[in-house]
Image 1: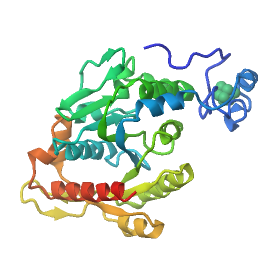
Image 2 (image 1 turned 90 degrees about the horizontal axis):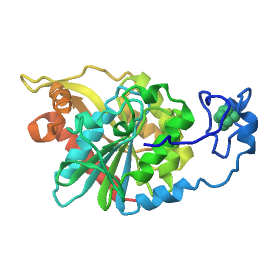
Image 3 (image 1 turned 135 degrees about the horizontal axis):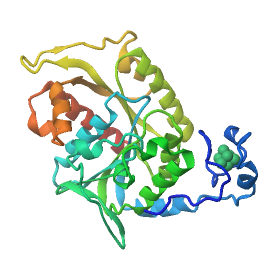
Image 4 (image 1 turned 135 degrees about the vertical axis):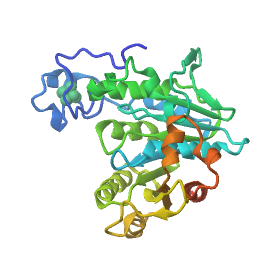
Length: 318
Ligand code: SF4
């Protein structure tokens, strides 16, 4: 892969750099004191020429669903993988799963595509098919090594994300599920701004019941509102524990303030349901298998399928 953003800068971009090719180049808070300020101020500005290319690339995809979380560790990628398997359970539905979590791409492992070689042709990079009607592609496949994105700064990460969005050849899909970076980091903001023009149906927000996670959900919903992204609903993950022996359910992360459901009501966004933690989910994800197929009788499977039904109702209600 070529360097994503060729630049002629004096020094590396600092943290929170708005991007030397962005409208705010040379004018952002991070630009004060940056050695590149003069160069960036003089670079030509205007509408991002890559956005129409991204829109063209994604134009044959009927529905695009972003999966967001206010913070890491709430099971966003796990839920993305289960949502992808659930949608692909209907063999007449074409599904794609896109992993844009540049600093922690985990969908290849969860969908059983770890170590796959990605093929490219004249029309772009071909997704890896993990089932006849389920293709996946991870930005992790494009990193020179696992740690590289962690040491990269803003503009370089953004360049790679853009390149990925422009180059992957999804073809026709009914649903594209997009696993995004957690929180409201620079990459997170970029991902949403690059994809917004392609017609996103909305965002599903994954959280856990604890207040510390819910605080970040408030920020995430605020972010979606400011960015003009519809919130399709909140799903509360790990909201109870399913004993693998007796299949009984108990509360482990007790909500102190009413959990995701109360927050949904307060903020006026749909609550899609609660999914209990079943230790077998982690095992199925580690092995790249569909938990839903392996354990159809688990209360977690019932809860996930219920959330997916409600999510699709919200998508169709647009
Ligand atoms: S590299 Fe350019 S856009 Fe980035 S912080 Fe420095 S002056 Fe601003």
